Image 1 (spheres, rainbow over the protein chains, first blue to last red):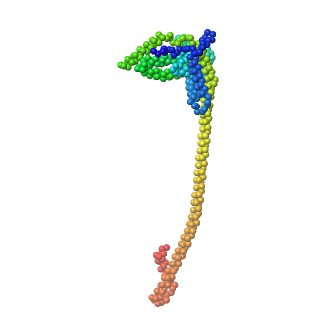
Image 2 (cartoon, chains in turn brown, green):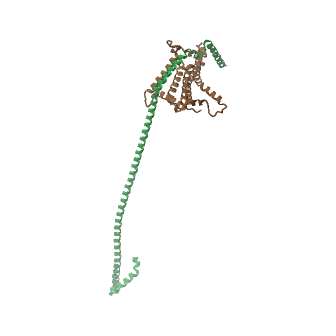
Length: 244
Length: 196
């Protein structure tokens, strides 16, 4: 029987224990893949921005296309006011995308399949967006919870629902990414296990499934990074242009 | 049928596998808080460094590259537009020159035609005068000839009639009486011979 499909998500120490006070901040395989993803992003975009040729070469084209892709996404959803936050959303999108994509390589570790990682990212966004909202509109930002044109009887209920939906943003954002990545990788592992257990006679069907799933998972990896970034843009739009 | 059994076996084996896993493992490693602090720490560190490097060094460069390419393309388009305008101007000039020269050629042609027409007219006049002169001369000669012909005929008539009379009668007749008769005759029938 194949190994447990959940063992691929195990985090283990690489190298010595590092402790600050009582906190364990040892270097793990998760840290390794965070660093690999970041370094890959930096290498690709550094190469892509080094030469300024009129007709871009392939890597320059890649960098510039991703730049325009993200910048168009931001200006479409959050408008021109979101320009100062472009770098953050760009790094967020690229980081999630590269972590997802590196997770697709066999024997690697998927950073974004851990709820704590996606939750921390979502919390950055949530806290940042809330701070931006209060800085732009002061206490007027609380109007976000009071939609206009609602009958006074329903207002208390609506306000409570709005507050709950606002507070659940980081949870929905992080769980969406984490669950997608975890489910996909578990499925692939399970089907991989079937290939072994059913052997040469019956293994072909799960193998073909596994191949199809790989394609689907690559799509999901891109799509979830995109969704993560575009939801960030939408939250940012709420904070910048208060029109509820 | 075989297909059905095949799928069913896969379906059931799925459950078997899951049960086996559930028995083996202690739940999801994601919910094990052992390395949460470490993950938060490393995530903040790497993402922070990534963000700083991207926002401070790489993204401005890419944006500069895009800007400069845009401006360069715009410049090129502007230059092309200018050149097009230039060429249009040149074309207009060329057309002007062509039309001007056409007009000039027409003028020259008209002048030459007028000149030749005038020449021909003057020469024709001279020739007409000459022809008129010659015709007048000829008419005069004819008139003279006509006049002299009548007199000569009269004289011949008088001479022949006097001689005839002399031969017939044998007597000398006065010439003046004969000439009076001939004149009278010629006047009466002169219209018959000369037509005027």
